[in-house]
Image (tube, rainbow, N blue to C red; front, side):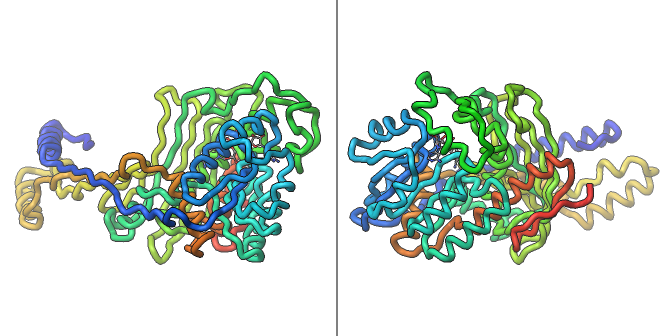
Length: 453
Ligand SMILES: NC(=O)c1ccc[n+]([C@@H]2O[C@H](COP(=O)([O-])OP(=O)(O)OC[C@H]3O[C@@H](n4cnc5c(N)ncnc54)[C@H](O)[C@@H]3O)[C@@H](O)[C@H]2O)c1
């Protein structure tokens, strides 16, 4: 708001009020979500590797697609194998060893919903075994290993889809179309954030009372991570430890990168700098609970260069919130489950600048200005909201796309290259934080290198 002499302020407020009164808003329901394929489509034998919080949700969402049958589940905690039969039936085969699943001829596709350090090893093995792969985000723990998945996808000819469901989300597709149609003018900045306000949201997950070296496959869980004695906190709260997880950037920034890349068509940032700290959850974790990132996005065929800010806070006393706000020269889009396009014409008001002139000059300036800008009064603000039909599920939609790629060869919506272009900048955000220096990221070659601090 202008800080001018009182008369200018009053004038400004009068105009602002007029604009508010004249503001218009409308709500549209987004229809036309593709729902391929029809019931009775080819059977797809599915197996889930890692039946924890997300693996359970993913499996339920996947089974909503007709013709998909859950054949087997692998998990390293026996309680989850019991859960597999309780939730999906006694016919589901269970094992601690994912290799048994990959050896089965009745499994066509696998969901990989293990902790992050197992994503690449299992994805590469699964593709080599001829399985289609739905791999949870972030696709990688380290950016360097992502190229192995890209290669394995190419070699196998199988479908790879990474599990950032926002890429399929109908509101994001609408945002993509609105942006491409010039609805916000020239994109110049994007601001995106997640705030959380609970212990579980901050990864203090439940540890079951029967957890013990007898019920947990600890040695296999460690995988390529350094050996250490059985520790149920590390097993069930793995996100807090750098040996297995990817911190808040790998967990949450990656969703925002995926969403942004789906909307803008951008391949990724060229410069990455992050800061933050462990501000509240001082429970032995090795990663920050507050992280801020700044990212430079280069010009592309579709958009001018723009800047991105990402913010994450796991102790936000105002409650849970998230947002993705694309700012353009002619409007702003707020994208979440729904998308709202807000516009306010650029004011031609000169009140703030007119005061420090003598009366005669003031009058001359004003009459010239009004002649040039006959619509001096503020244009009305407008807001259009597009929301999905009731009951819409982005996760189910994402799985419909996965199975459509398997059955009909429909283009993959989030293949290994897309996955690396989202997860790469996310895990490089951690490098920037832990090494206190900016990083360069090559979004085409998908490679990182440190920049001078
Ligand atoms: N797309 C999303 O919105 C979303 C949401 C949450 C989590 N995720 C991702 O899903 C993955 C799992 O997260 P979660 O919250 O479900 O964790 P979780 O700890 O609840 O579940 C992980 C499961 O994997 C099992 N496991 C560990 N190593 C294994 C191995 N080698 N073989 C077989 N099973 C193994 C564990 O026993 C556990 O049951 C993470 O990579 C996470 O980033 C994605």
